[in-house]
Length: 92
Image: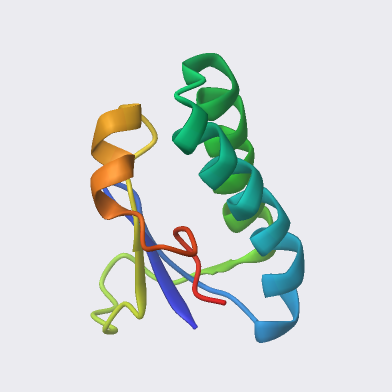
């Protein structure tokens, strides 16, 4: 799956990484619902860091369609809340 982090670029993630990423995504969803801004910020950055770690960066000149777009690292809780689906940022 091709994932874009807004303001950074794209990475290719293997499907095998989604179980690990979904754990962080579930935590993020819980923190969003509770309005815990401190925990949200910590988990959101951990999720983005994990995507960067596990993903294979695509060249800057690659124009692959993104199957998933993640908010920029400086996105607020409210901005991320607007992008969330019922099951979080990651499908499944």
